[in-house]
Length: 85
Image 1 (cartoon, rainbow, N blue to C red):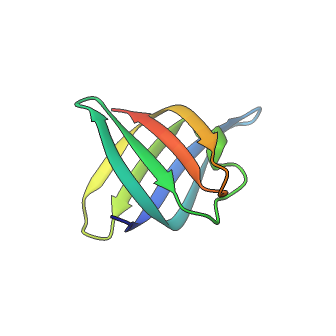
Image 2: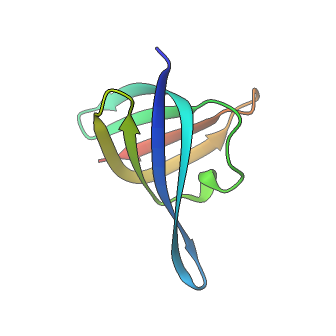
Image 3: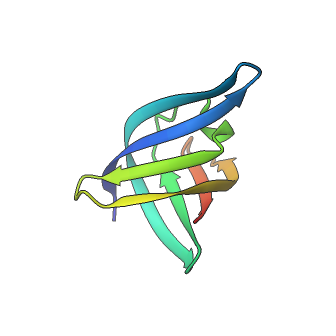
């Protein structure tokens, strides 16, 4: 089921981490007790695939956060992230 979420993420740069925020639609799939997958529906920011940590605030108020273990762009322009908690 698609959910509306606010994603707060950090990108590392030569000048230190830069915090960014986007509002988007996501699909969340549990993988294990310590990891989940997030499919960020397009349009996706150009730098989200470089994020190293992510905090997701769902429209229901639930918060999920963790470290981005893997990111890949899908053929339909969505972005799939594996998050380790």
